[in-house]
Length: 499
Ligand SMILES: [Zn+2]
Ligand SMILES: [Zn+2]
Image (cartoon, rainbow, N blue to C red):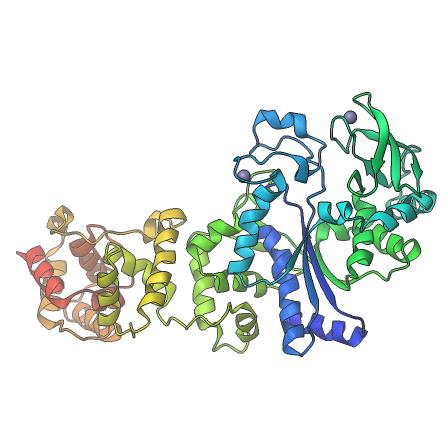
């Protein structure tokens, strides 16, 4: 049984009204590692829909979170904004209404492409709309009780001046530099003193924020969340789920949500993705090189509790090969189904072949289709095939290692003069026996027959073929490669190489 089916069954069995929730802070580029949160939630959401349940599905953007420091990707001028909520900081490019929106915009666009239909909830709007106010009052009235829960769960002592609410300074705009002095429940205001010297009152509706450990459980109650996946950092002993669960149940009187804990996605050779470390691939970057279905599949094929290593180079082609076969595989079928995005018609041409074809055809659309037709593919879905070819071309430009790159040479490469007598004989025999319409398999068998007749190693014949056509000793699978090329062109070239 697929892990997403297990989660959905458990949720249905709980008898609770189902609200699926996710949360990612737009403090930097939202990356493929973050996507695991969305895909993990969406998989359960889809299964619930299949079973006739229509849960609410939220993506909570923590736009009220403060900027923690000047990240490596930011200009030095951002030093003045450290400690302010992300929704109140100017956008780095000038085209978005705020810092938060700058990083949200490409992410929300990618969610659309990935067919993840979560409703976006901006935390700063929840605060400003007063939806947190009751939770803020309850937290302030239960300050000691919350501090005790945190102490018990973390084994550390909270500071005497600790407050569950961080007011925003009216003068400098920071929420990280204030100390709470008191509160007025009726006016829904909090009194503060700031490092900058200011002293005053901040509104509970937008003038500050609950600290993370309290904000999260407050949000469960506000949105009535019953299922939420989260990363293993929140799940540790004394982590924010352990304290959140107790605060939710003991202070807000709301049962904590069912959940799935997921492991990180790391970038091959660069560790766990983290936007503050800068070792990330953005979702947009990946969606340039693979269709959204495959990106979903890449995450869904692995159970949430197992870590994933993303290597966008040649190993990613193996993931795509697996995806291309997944519909017919008992083991992968369910991940394949849960990965599908709308009703895109299936393109039969394997991505790996397109990686070769776009190079053979030098990106010429008609040549791409001709090459595919020659090697026996149905090319009637012209637009879909060319769209997939575009992904392959971008992958070649961005992530492909040199060994998969080649260029079909317009004239006989100079390296052909180094071919042995045996290799030349093999090319001549190929020129004589190749006929238009031979399948990749036929050609593969022909090559093996010729090497037997000439008492050569298979490698000798393959090398001769590649040198004559590409000017280097290696290339794509030879039978398939020759089947996709124009036969007259090959015959002419092989004869030239022998002359
Ligand atoms: Zn911007
Ligand atoms: Zn201040």
